[in-house]
Length: 158
Image (cartoon, rainbow, N blue to C red; front, side):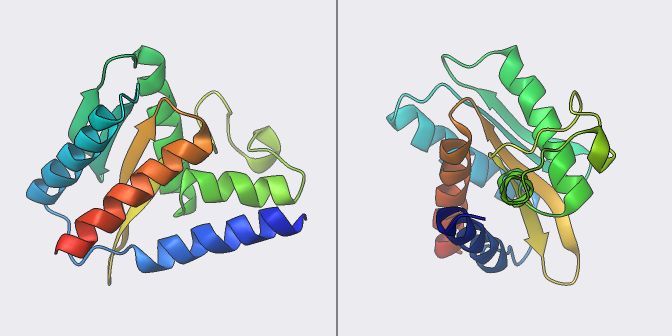
């Protein structure tokens, strides 16, 4: 594994350790979703934003330039977070470090799962991963970074 990839994996693991929600209500999903939409709108980013708790979609927005393909990517990324209890970016980078991809050899259908950045777990102490915050429309590192930036900002306010 390259040193850069090793550092990236360590950074994302640290993000996941730090970015834990004390609780996660419908109001939290709305506020975080609006924050993401505002950040993306200010930067004219062509993204779709999605926030879920369990099976329930609590927030969804498609910004100018996004399309239904982004929604399909969201579904695939969300499945990765729920299956592996880690961000879609971390799952993908860990596999890349081993020279592997998320495919049938991993027991999943790549048409239904995407280990590409942009879906981040909503963790609550004592409950584990209870939801997912997802952005789709940018290169995977940028999708991931936007979600992390929004969660860091949101948790700093609380």
